[in-house]
Image (cartoon, rainbow, N blue to C red; front, top):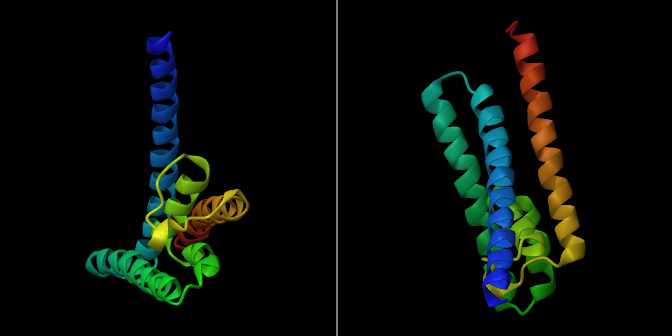
Length: 140
C-alpha cells in the first residue's frame, strides 16, 4: 500500500516538473527570441536578453524586499508580475506545489496565480505573434 502511494506521489511530482519545465522553456525562449530578433547584431542580442532577464528580476526582487521590510506583504505577490523569472515562480507556486522564492515566502495564491498563468500564456502567444510579424516584414 505504501509503495503504491509513493509511486503516485512521485508520478504527480514528475508530471508537475515536466509542466513547469515546458512552461519555463516556452516563456523564456519566447522572450529571448523576440529580444534577439529586434537587435541588429548577435552580440547585442545576447546582451539584451541577459539584460532583460537579470535587470527585471533584480528590480522586482529589490522592490519586493523593500515591501517585506515595510510589512507590506500584500503587494509582494503582485510585484512578481513584472519580471519573467518571478512570473514563472508565481505559476509554479500557485499551481505546481513549488516553494516560493519570493521574500518571506509570500508567493501568489490561486487567484493571483491564475493571473500569473494568463500573463505567461499571453506572453508566449504574443512573442510568437511578434516573431511571425517580424519575419514576415523581413521577407523570411
